Length: 418
Image 1 (cartoon, rainbow, N blue to C red):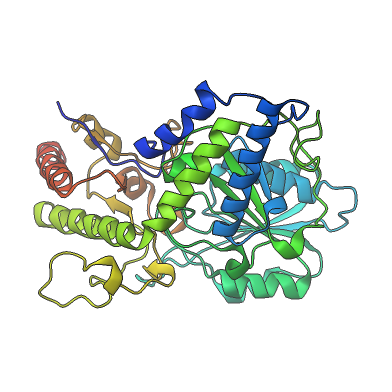
Image 2: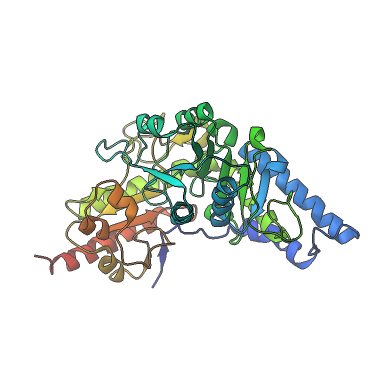
C-alpha cells in the first residue's frame, strides 16, 4: 500500500539536498565548535558563524540575534519565561490568543499560577475571509502599560490563519510591551522578516521547512538586542549566556541550508502547494456533500492567472507580498469538517493517508481541538474535522488519490450514521 503523507504541519521530510549538505559535518568536520584551541574546532566554529549570518540575513536579524535551540518549543519557553521571570521585569500582565499552540498555552498557565494576569483574546468566527483573526480593537483595549509580553502565533498550525502583525506591533511598541511570535508554521513557507513583522522575539523549528529535527531558533529583533531575557538552560555560557550547551553543529548546517533552499524556491513552491491545496478542497467537495472549511477562505485565483487556467503560472509572473498571495492563510493548509462522522473513525478507514485531527502535540488527547472550538465549531464538528498539510514533495496524483480514498471511506462510514 502506497502511503500518501499529508501531515506537513506536524513535520516535513528532510530534503535530500539538506541531508547531503549535513553529511560532511557528521563524518569529517565533527569537532566541538567551542574547542577553538585546535584547527578542527575553529573550522566548525567558522562554519557555524557563516550559517548564523546567513540565517540572520534571511530572517531580517543580526547574527548575534540568532539563538539556536532544540526547536520552537524551547524557543517559545525561553521567550515567555525569559521575559516574564527576569528580575528586572516589573510588569505582571501577559496577552495572548485562545488559538495558540500548547507550547505557548502551557507556559502561560504556569505563569498564571505564579501570579501573572493572563489575557487570552478571542478570534473572528463569522467572516469567512477572516476566521481566526484577532480583533485589533480588542488588542487595543487589553494591551496597556502593565503588559509585559504579548505572544501571538504568526501562522496557525491547525487552520492556517495569518495574523495582522504590523498593526499588532504598533500597539505593542506604543505601550512598551514585548511582542513574541511563534512563527513555526510560517518560516520557510511564506516570507518572514522580523524587521517587517515588528516582533521583538520570533521562534522557529527547522523540521517544519524540510530541515532536521531537534534544532530551531529564537530570533531577536535588531532593536531588541538589549532585551532582558532570563536564561532557562545554564552551564557553559554559550550563545551570549542565553542558551548554554554544545551547539548542534550538524543541525545548524542543515537549518541554514534548508532555509536557504526554502527562500530560493518560495515563490514557485508557494503557488504549487496552494494549487494542490485548492485541488484537494475542490475534489473533496465533489465527492462529499456538506463539507465545511475550518479557517479563512482564500481567493480561488492566483495573481495574473486567467480564469481558464488550471495551474499556476511561472514563478517570474507571480507577485509575492509579505504574506504570499494568500492574505489570510498559509498556502499548504486545509482543515475540513466532515459532516456527521468522527474524524478519528474516518482516519482509521484510510490508513494509507497520513493526516491529523489537530496539532501533532495534542492529537493523542481525547479533547476536541481548542482551535476549532475557538472559531465556533461544536464538539461534534471539531471531532469530525481533519487537517491536511500539503508540502514540497506532494504531487497532483497523490492529491487526486487522497480525494478518492477519502470519498470512498466517507461514503462507507456515513452509511452507519442516522
